[in-house]
Length: 144
Image (cartoon, one colour):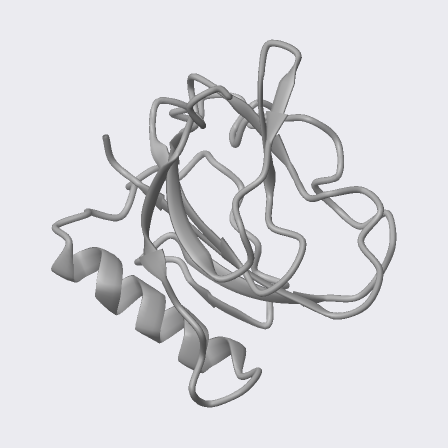
């Protein structure tokens, strides 16, 4: 068994159901308490179409239920944004079918409800391409 290329920061199961604003605020509060600082980068794309997002905290919470939606190809955040700072970390969380992380030819996937952090510059990641049903997901870009 290989060590996963991510660190588990804890588990989070929302108490208020499926409210993206509640999940986003709870998880960004948690990252702040851990001493994490939001990435400051005007060049990297932010998802203003997410159900909840905060440009100041560089965070978003999404509701997805559509097959083949954005992010299903292996990528690093900022790889299509000229001038973006790709040397940052990502805090990720999902209620189901968490983000897959790839190093070389090995694919890792955390458990649902685990809060993880990855080094964006060292790994590739994607939304699992064959997700069916409802999924809540959170991402926050933070400085390394």
